[in-house]
Amino acid sequence: MKFQRRQVLKAAGGAAVAYGTPLFSLGDDPSRDRRALVIVGPSNHPPGTHEVKAGGRLMADCVNRLGLDGLSAEVSVGWPEDRSSIENAATLVFIGDKFPAEAVKNRQQAMADVVGAMSRDCGIVCIHYATGLEEQHVAPYHAKGEQHPLLTWMGGYFATRCKHHKSIARLMKATIEPTAVEHPILRGWQEFKFDDEPYINNYLGPDGLAENVTPLATSMLPPNDPTEQITAWSVERKDGGRGVGIVMPHYYRNWLVDDLRTFVTNAIVWSAGFNVPEEGCRTPKPELAKYEPDAIEPRRKAGGY
Ligand SMILES: [Zn+2]
Image (tube, rainbow, N blue to C red; front, top):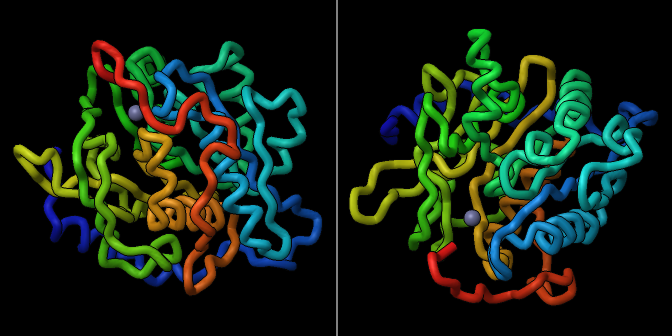
């Protein structure tokens, strides 16, 4: 699917009114546990790439450093044993190789946990490969004439090795541009350039972008045959929940990109139903070693990444 700029702006502009209105705001539901739960799924990517545990800790730290009244973040490496942490979360943030609820050993229970959370308007954010579904994940739904529920929860996904759609993962230099819409997630960051693996030709549904999905960032990719690609998007679900897909970063070192960090942190805060500060959720440049990655810089291996 090729995506034209005017389609992006048209689709995005249609629902602009809704963006400034929080689903719920601080104090209107004191019983709610306002926690962003970062769930780290499995990964077997080489050191310096994906670094899902360190990336998960870093994202949680970014949220906690904001000092927002009522919102904190915690990390679960692996699927949470204490199910109440999912039941009480304001948003679930996923990092891992493939959508973690489909990638963990006990996927049936994990998917049931997410179904439960989504049915009570919990937010969801997936980062890079956690936006990914394979044929084995989508086929059971397609056989019944249905879509994988991640499409509804998050508004799209990275369809990797799927029959119905072929998203593309490739290391390349990219310029990530915020779209021209008013959206809290776009506060406080600007266009940025980096060397990464922003997925392209992401799957946004059988009819393309749905009405309740907003493109947040685009990029002209791939460099040798560029078309406008949606590299991040958000959804306001009919059940009231909010979802965000951001198909980067691949390299752990790219968490040093201030604009990307603000973008991701804004997404977490917004998905939890909180107001994003006007200046955006800016955090100091992180000390990457503090989050205990296997490596900060990628070690090039035969066969690439
Ligand atoms: Zn990657």
